[in-house]
Image (cartoon, rainbow, N blue to C red):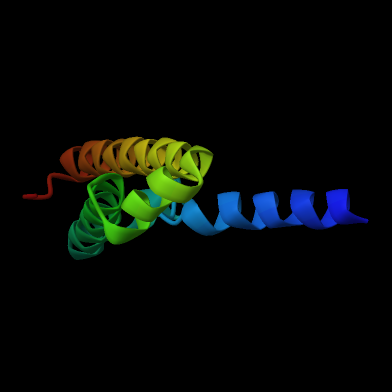
Length: 105
């Protein structure tokens, strides 16, 4: 029973520290977006990227994770890296779609 509690606690700590949301690179209907909607989606992707970069920096949560449970910090950094890459890919995709439509982005 104590192993189950310990395993559950470790799993909870790992998932609690992996905060940054990973944006979907492709969304249904991207090709039909107007130029203004594309600009808004790019802005949203930039916000996701900024949030992920903030999570990757020196935060109180990351310092606590490093001190008390360093694997959680590694999970957070890995998740943040995935979130940053997904946001970049999303912006590139939207930019290509906007270019095809002649949007000024």
